[in-house]
Length: 132
Image (tube, rainbow, N blue to C red; front, side, top):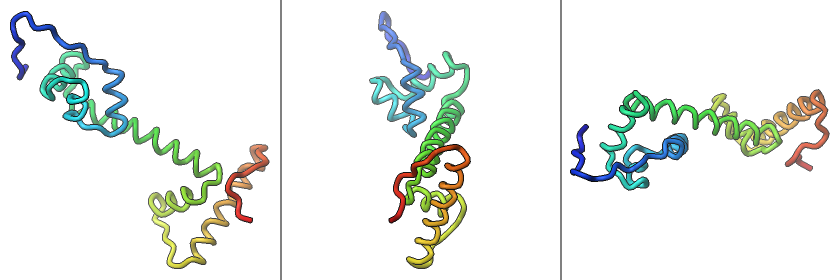
């Protein structure tokens, strides 16, 4: 361990569920350690001790889990008819672009038509944010 334990000093308990939530949210080890009131080296050493892996690998695993949760939430918002999210996902995930206002409107209308089709197949009758 890189941090020497003082004689008689009590080891601070680490709430790993809380650490996991912070990592999923994108926090760094240094930020988490500060929040927990411990040094970063203590967090890294305890990760090796308790989780049996180095902190860098642990961070990558939990951050990837957070990315999945975020993508699922974005997809839910988009498929409920949020035009802005549909356009954003189209541009960022599919590489689509809108060169003018007409293209943006066409993408938006097409996306809503697709959602209506999916909703009809699944029995959903109401789509939020429909254009008038």
